[in-house]
Length: 317
Image (tube, rainbow, N blue to C red; front, side, top):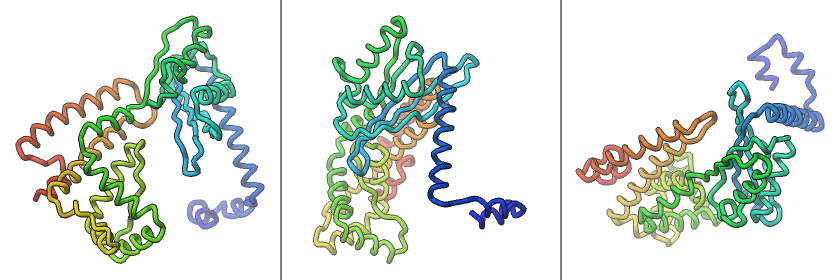
């Protein structure tokens, strides 16, 4: 910090030098910032004339389920505010009742007016969207008495629909080999270290990420990295006595390259759908234009033109 101060504002170097950076001081400052941000959020929530909530439950690397809660509201000047409310650790079960209780507790803590809730967005898990006892059903029941029967909208994450679309591609022959190979390298620390050593010898600066079935973006990252490192992976697996025979199949390599290109196109679409302060018309335009691109690409591929599929074009050259 002192080095940065000397460059950015040398005239205030002494002021920076007087700042205490003991553990207790830093912890106190972080706590003060947290309290201030929480106070600001509560003030904004009071001004909402309508709000929607988004929740997502996922498991972290310590096997603890984490419930992320977000709120998006608009005030009487039509100013839209999107804020993160809370990350709630679910240390026990993650039933619909558990998730709903955590959600209500977090929203009550920031002082929402339940009569102004207009929508809820969730992931596509059964505990979220179950018709009889899902979180959505419980949320709607709570609002029936609060908002006088006003319409209430529910949505769930498009990424889960894309994961289902992926299964319709009939590319299990590709993903099965990729996952088995990546797991062999990553799940054993010795293999992982030796593979990283091989990459360093070849001046390659990145390794293989883990594959996560639920996270679509991780699928694209794994496939792309696997494709880029295919020669190094083939060499490593042969040295370990676990040769990947599919690397010698031109048809399988074309399937792999096609899968890489398709997931990258879908990842680009996902990134367009992410971000703050977007409205439904922007989402509609992004998806509509992507569907038009799909029609164009299908026609081009039928004619032998792989211009928009660079990996496929590379292996077919």
